[in-house]
Length: 125
Image 1 (cartoon, rainbow, N blue to C red):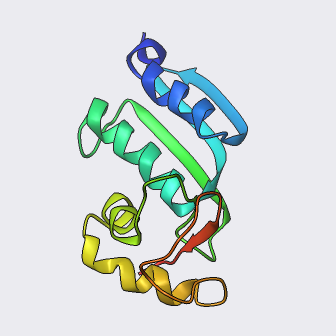
Image 2 (spheres, rainbow, N blue to C red):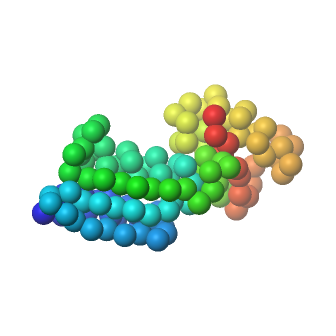
């Protein structure tokens, strides 16, 4: 029953490619374990858990580790994106585009010029 309640979390885990996943249910508590690629992926998973179970759910225990905690995320640029749009997506503020630009100064020379398929580092703030 608890597994069905959190099915959207489990589906999201698959979509985020959570590795070494393990899901068990004991005494009405769903226990999930796995490794997210980045801190951002872990945050997205926790946001989904809180969306379903509230801020402090007692019917789920999640032990999610992170494979690469040196960055917040890695982002592949899509056509039409700007650093401002990317910053808004990850940080909620377009003005944080400068942090992304600085973290990628080895491949970006101008914050107004990015190209599809470039892989950008989204730094931890």
